[in-house]
Image (tube, rainbow, N blue to C red; front, side, top):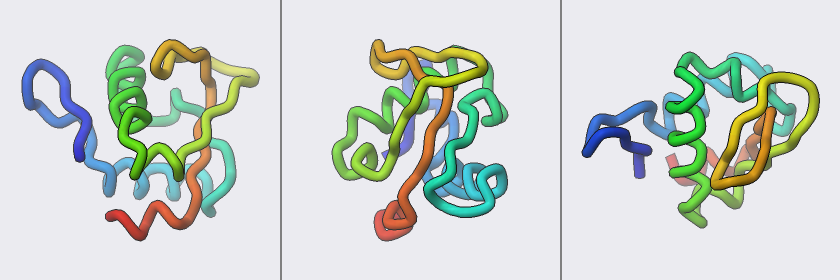
Length: 91
């Protein structure tokens, strides 16, 4: 269930993504700027678009658009993501 770029090279595992999110947000449910993830613009779009396509993962991810750098997640503009605590049940 990891996002991939260039035929199989993992960008960031879901566990790493959740760990980084929690270090930025402090707790689940708080929006974190997508630009806070330690990846390039295209990699962030690819990573989150890939996870967004998986129902078992995407139901715990919530994208929003506000102030900050804009990204296209599966064609939809977003600046922030928040995660539900229940995402830990699939790690």
